[in-house]
Length: 141
Image (cartoon, rainbow, N blue to C red):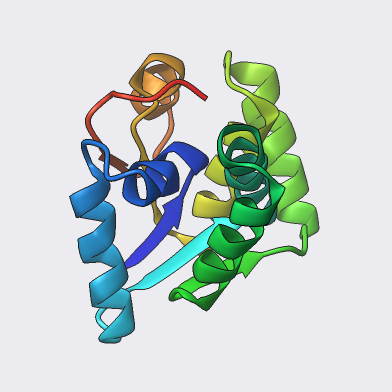
């Protein structure tokens, strides 16, 4: 199974928030080769700047190193298809550009989009064929 994390999913894991245990299990399964986990670099930027704001630059660098050592494959190249899907999703729904890019990454990789952002993304889930793995709502980006 393939999973694509958004920022709030990874933050829930890092901060031991509700749903963090689900992300932990996904990471364990990825380490064991039972699944694949991806994250778009734009969503990783969200995690990194949130770490800088809340913990300071020095601690944020250490957290980023931990993330990059985890079994998360960072998508940093935007294919034409990903670019167009992200643009379509952003134009069609009230979601952030980062969420649109993460969703487009899930489409491109045929993965489940892992998020706790029910408020912003339920309309997408209701109207698109993207499978979601919903975490408990708890964190505002």
